[in-house]
Figure 1 (cartoon, helix red, strand yellow):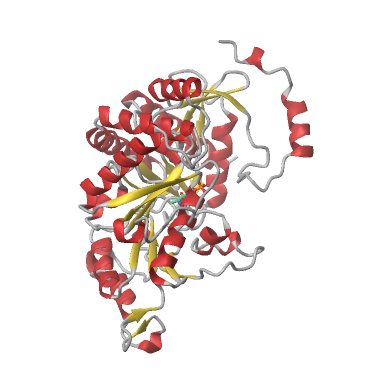
Figure 2 (cartoon, rainbow, N blue to C red):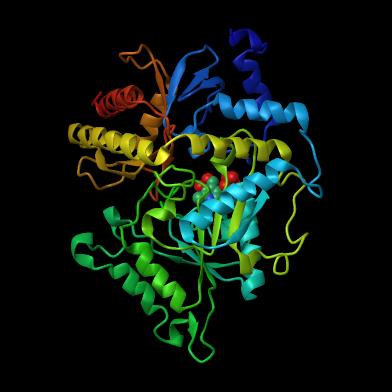
Length: 464
Ligand SMILES: Cc1ncc(COP(=O)(O)O)c(C=O)c1O
């Protein structure tokens, strides 16, 4: 296929039109001149001249199973030909079967019965979870982590720690208390995991020690903040994996203080970390699980949540409690069902553990060759490279930005010919590459990624 022939307008003309007609408000615009792409396949994106770019972020973990995954694409085409449109007041098979598969995954993982409801994006599913918590508790104060990200709708941005996302919009009324995330490489308490004995959890526990700490009414035995929103591995915050016992210790306190656990799997769900749900690594049972992104492998905006039965039974959350025209739309649920069937036919638990270990080993070697890499770590194929000054700790955002831009410029010499690299800059200090490669990435592609990163770190740190 000649992709260039398909595009009648020059890039200059498109940029002029973009400048005139497109709001910037609905994008992240990391680059002053965002790139146009026009093709994709597997782990690669192609620019308007058909030049390849290895993608290490896969639409922020939305295309875990590869661009244009044929099996999933075919299911959408079949749905397009049979029943592409249907109002949400009616039922269709794909909705029911998708909900069943997700509820069964939660039953398997947590041993709890529950139900699934759909919406169109991660933020909207977070909004639905907020409604569930509010109905169940009658309260609207929540806890969440510093560096956490739960979306940018008004409700979701209240529980997202970055003030930048709220500053210009006022408050919507869910205010959250933000608890320091266990970011051990930069411990908020300046401790070391080897000797801290989870000091951070002890600090959290102290919030409930006396009513004067403002979190707990000992007479009524009631908390004021009624749900804790967590990501199993912090995504936008910098692909940070909490230490092994953190969630277990935290959950014990949440149970004692009657605080619900809402597990936001929007970015880490569906095997990004090597388990179906990221939280499964940590042995805790959430009350609500929120998911989105790769539920459809990025083929349709569909998201949703699972909640334990008492929170979401038809009595507790009757019809109309939350509804969007497009929630559980047939194309989305067909894509989701095909994605879940695809997952069943693979062995991602083994595959992601193996490729993640290989990738991390290569990143550790890369770190030895570059003093600008302060930390590499990961869980499964959720990997991180923390870009620093040569002291391996002071964040170096400017260098991360340079590497990001040069990767996107393309044409980097590699053993496979000229190539670009698509990265995602994340982190509390915006100095981390959060790597979310295709879960089917090959060993050869991981080697290519290392070749590209090596070249980029070398060229961007060289003195002129
Ligand atoms: C953990 C997490 N929760 C929620 C969201 C919001 O999802 P959406 O962008 O689909 O609204 C995101 C998006 O990046 C996310 O990473």
